[in-house]
Length: 210
Image (cartoon, rainbow, N blue to C red; front, top):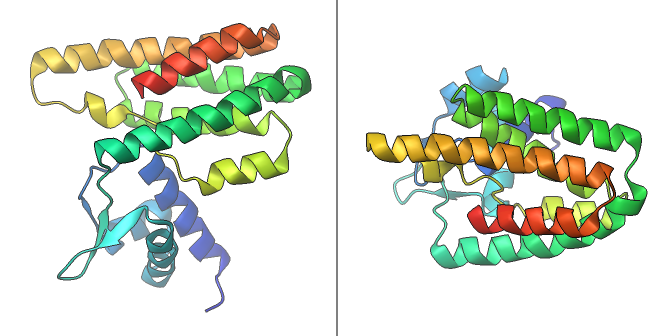
């Protein structure tokens, strides 16, 4: 089946939401809601589902329906190891190759994340996190490395960690969002200074914290 521009749009939208942590594990994805959110039709969403099933980002329920994949502790450990390996390689290249435009986009995205965090907008932080790390790897200006990173389908944000029921845990989560966003600001600043050791240290901290 030939994909349409709208089907690609649906795929990109749903994939971004999945990788940003904006859906809960085992959550059923409803076609109508996604149609309205992405401004596409049901056929487009179904094509997107087919691609996401192949990539393993969603699963089909025993009685039908499409659900968000549940990651085991082992899954997360392995994906964060892959993230660490690729981003470390990207940073070493980006220190020499990042352009002024690359640096500006990273700084702008980090500041946006911080603003979202200060306003308690968890979903906005997750989306910013995804964009920031994509930009970081892209700043290496190595197409094959970036393609590998995108194909890895790494769930970049740990925002689901902050979705707790207890009020005390919510407060901890809010502070964590602020600190995580500040770390991204520091990553952008260190890259501008071409300080590879500082960037790698911050990247390692960010990956461990998820």
